[in-house]
Amino acid sequence: EPEVTQTPSHQVTQMGQEVILRCVPISNHLYFYWYRQILGQKVEFLVSFYNNEISEKSEIFDDQFSVERPDGSNFTLKIRSTKLEDSAMYFCASITGEYNEQFFGPGTRLTVL
Amino acid sequence: AQKVTQAQTEISVVEKEDVTLDCVYETRDTTYYLFWYKQPPSGELVFLIRRNSFDEQNEISGRYSWNFQKSTSSFNFTITASQVVDSAVYFCALDRGSTLGRLYFGRGTQLTVWP
Image (cartoon, rainbow over all chains, first blue to last red; front, side, top):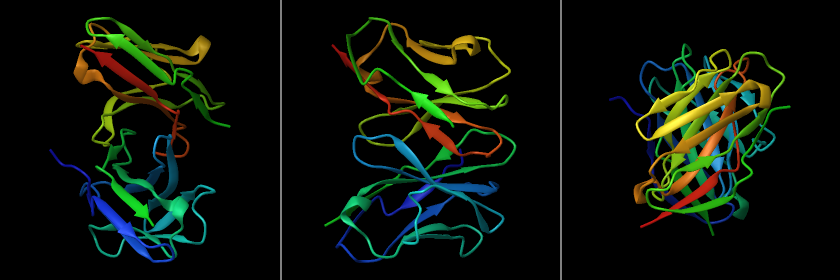
């Protein structure tokens, strides 16, 4: 069964460093998403991406964040200068566009020291 | 504004008990979708069900059942004869439909099933 994959599973970084979280959505999916979950809290929407551009972003998704689909398979989330409060689990998700069932990746746990 | 409320922060039951997790949502959209996800201790989000706003039929899948009531804006989830493996955080989520795929999550309910 096709699945969304994410790498790395865990990333530790120093405050102020740049990180890139990688996702490979399901191959025939057209819409891509990043969500974040701070430990013990709810899952929060960050950004949606369609047709090579951002279609919607939340107030969390400030200038420190960017997304990119550099090739036909990867979907990346970059945090330019990490802060302690960026420590969270980051989930990538994708859908076909016909159905609203979101397929989530296993997540990347980001720890900022 | 869209909002999902899961008033129960934590629930503890003993194995074989039935348990209902509550979800109340707010939206002005007439077309929307409701979801339940399970998050086990390993952290991934496991899809359980999707229901669209035009389908108020209750659904049963094995020990799981869902009660969707538009009149009270609720989409409750019942586990019958709970098992230890059901221990997890359960999230209810809303998709407006008009903003395809953006999910609004509730805060989750931590379910602990004791042997």
